[in-house]
Length: 135
Image (cartoon, rainbow, N blue to C red):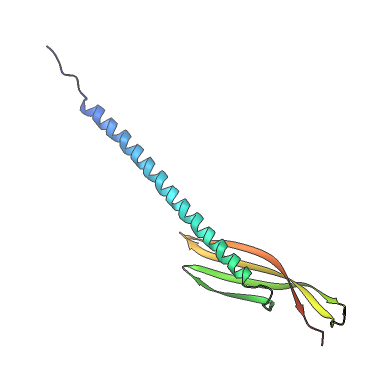
């Protein structure tokens, strides 16, 4: 008597269980990759926003010591800290009056929510600011 060869119910269930576990593992790997791409994108945007804040404190802007902060939109929040580090009096030269030059430490922090945590990017810089003749 010829018996037809085929899969038993047990073999079929085991194969389905293995395929299901493989599908779950692939789904988790894909979703982890998507979350990583989103986190990297948000961090990159935060760095660009911090660089923009630093650039806005260019040569023509008076630096005022202290802290300021505000909402930057899209869930981002900025904090600026300006602190004088050293001041020097430059002597008068070639008929120009004496001037005071101050070195400032500048720190820009951009924060944003990411899941249940708060993420942060901090950029630091130093700038020179000159003032006219002392009074």
